[in-house]
Image (tube, rainbow over all chains, first blue to last red; front, side, top):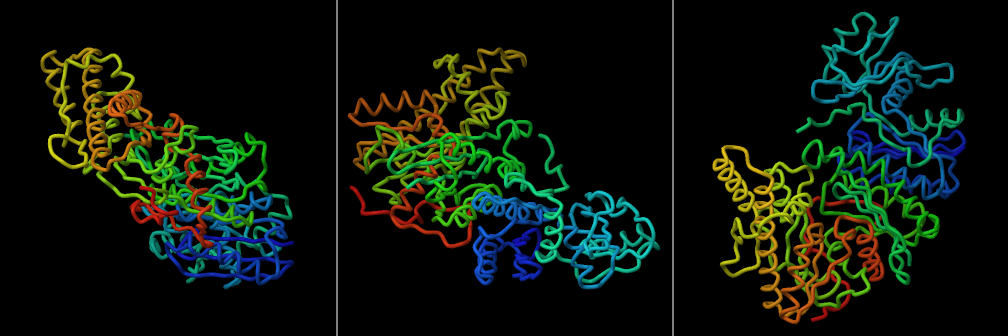
Length: 225
Length: 348
């Protein structure tokens, strides 16, 4: 199984190659430089592994939520590559990848992921790590006020992601005793995306390139004139 | 060489295949007008969201029309600016990455160079040198053209572009979005003698334009007519105002184009951009230039608005001249045409 995954949804830009269980990654903190960095990163990974794009089985991308422009860059790049080499695409939730990364770093298995959605709202998703060690959604992702996020069942949940920095007190108040702590780091990385994508690939959850479309969560972007 | 062209700089997704030997093989345009109509103008975020859904299906459609497959693509050209940055990024990311995956060259194309060279897609292509009038919702420019990439701006609008003035005046007259073409249809029923609008900046030397005053003039004319009619003006009055406005814009453009041809000594004028589809402008320009022994050239109407064919063609010209694009994409919202690299010697 060979898979290339990319993320351009936030401040960092990353690409990862998963080749028969081995992961390699390129990652840079580079706000607004994704368009310059992402293709060379992908090329380096493929070249260093001695592969050609045609050797891959699938392509994955962080489909959002995140920066609107950022997720569109990843979607468009993956559409172009996947169409060019005739491969399927696996869209992966940015929030799920953050949860996966939090588990990798901390070992915690109940994760509440929040991104700062501006306009006094968060992008929100709850995840539990399953027996295979992969983040699984508990409920649907949403964009809402910190006071309106769904309260998780049970206890031992950890907050993760930049939304917790932006709305710390309000989220803590909302989650209450179900919250065991808030984790420091919380960025989306292509290596975590790749693991989730591999599992989706095994389940046959793939789409044709033109359906590599962002999931913005926020669909009200303007007022009618 | 078969070049795939991708245009996503504003509110139209355009894709085309141009072949150096056989010309334009196929093209398709998807217009977002219904999406933006309810907002009365282009909403950049909605434009970007739609491009990312439509561009790849259009590529498949164009390949099907040409009875070709993706491996028949020899190069990819995409609009790299100027335009809405989020919208440009979609086409640039898609085009650049597709070229990489196919292992073929890519080239970023200047949107206005695309418009300017579009008449060269036609059988009666004008030879260099010529003067080009680029006239659209975003631009009004007179350019002296002595070859591909050899552009000297002779004059441009100091405020509203001509197409913008059409749309804003249409809004004043209560016409639906996008108002320019609707205004032109209404003007056909108008009496050209009832109102007379000024011809801005024609009473002094120079080749610059100013159209923002015309919409104010239209507003004042409408208010006076409403006052005379106790608030309820008839359809004929609207048509008469539309006609007077259109006459003023067309007259002004014709006066400046004739002046530009005289000053440069060129014999040929190329009209390009969305407003160049305007029938009155084409007819009036053709007559005025013919009377002086000069020629007017314009592309077929479907290639006047934003389209992929002009991008594929301009890209083909640049690829032929050895243009290459590194493995990245960096579209520019602003990009002066005079910064473009010339292709070949100047033809004077």
